[in-house]
Image 1 (spheres, rainbow, N blue to C red):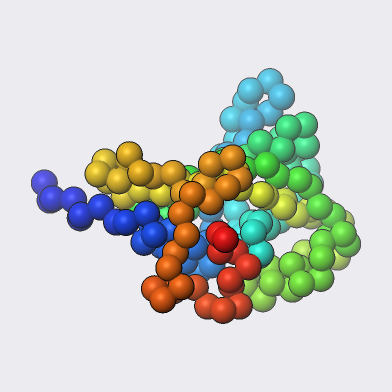
Image 2: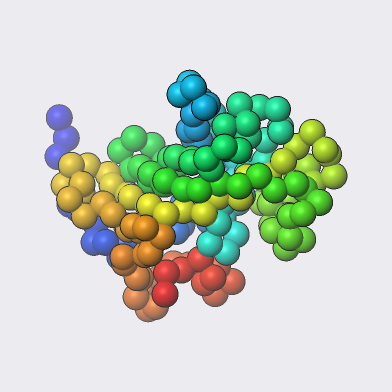
Length: 170
């Protein structure tokens, strides 16, 4: 068995999390139907401003499950470097998606379903963000609670570009 890496500082875990939100393309998305039937699917996303945006067919269980409660849970990364996000999602029609958000989605994912009525967007606002690698990071894994960032990166060490500063906690 290998020894775990030393725990990252909360600021480093936040920088790593923001890098994942900026750079990763896919996440596992969990929802549940009104009778409690779980649904877990991978969906591509873009982090734009302070929300995640994903697209799915309006008839898929993920979109159907979001409608009554908006509750969504998603994960990024491998199991030994996970970001767990609990969120509230809303369905947005492609024609109602802000142009800048739709353009960011299309540019990152090289796909633009805005004009296809079979597809809807999920606009997902995080209210809890946790990140950890090993058990030595579990105690301090909370980066956001109740929609408020608990940690801020120092400006001198932030790897986030100036154009992505809107997603930084303030």
